[in-house]
Amino acid sequence: MSVFSVFSSGLSAFADLVALLAELLTPLFGGAATAAAIVLFTALVRLLVHPLSRAAARGQKARAALAPQVAKLRARHRRDPERLQRAVLELHAKEKVSPLSGCLPSLLQVPAFFLLYQLFSSSRIGGEANALLDHALGGAPLGDRWTDAWAHGGPFGGAGTVYLLLFLVVAVVATLGYRLTKAQLAAAPALAADAEALPGMAAMTRFMPLMGFLTLVTVAVVPLAAALYVVTSAAWTVAERALLYRTPAPAASAG
Figure 1: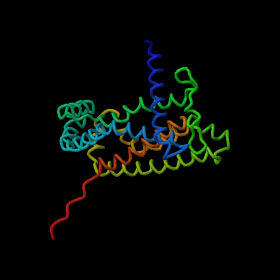
Figure 2: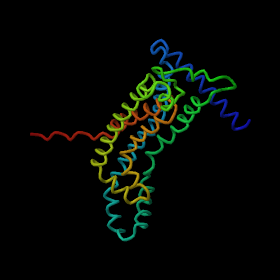
Figure 3: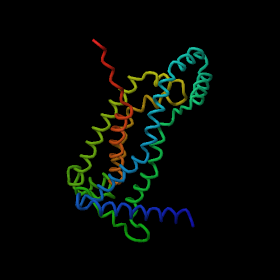
Figure 4: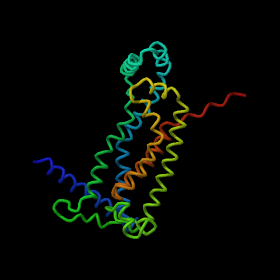
């Protein structure tokens, strides 16, 4: 069996899953049942990778706990950046701490997003017309993009309004994520110092607070169904980070 055949079969099975979820949700959401099914599917994917998110949070706290040792290494190898990088990597390996563990939840979502993108970009599935492309959210077909909304009714038409609401949600979520990430980095300066000692990590740490705003671009260029996945996942990420990385309140001193 060819790779194409396997992929085609998998896409057909995924289409059946989305259709089944939409059928189950129709009594609650009516014509928006397929959009609701995509949101539900996204939540299920995020639940599956949640254990990795918890592990990433534990890894970040473990990295913060290594701050005193990293500080000593920085003082010892301040004139030799390459030796400092090797020493920090050796320390992480010894303590079984991975600076890249936080990337795993995002990487493992790529296949789910790719399937959804392909499903709502394909005119035919399993040799038949893709009926899911006829489904819509508020008048915006799930297989269309923002440029299609401009061509049919303009930015303030029925479909255009759906995208404007999505952009508004993304802007709010990205702003909350930005403030949350900045606050977490400020509360744990050891993480920034740790990142400075690792190749590429310093730039990633500086760029991380702004990553949520890239979702605006994604929503504008992918099919609406994939945009719903991205927006739902982004909102989940912010809520999850607020929960997993929250700072315990200091204990009240005895008076």
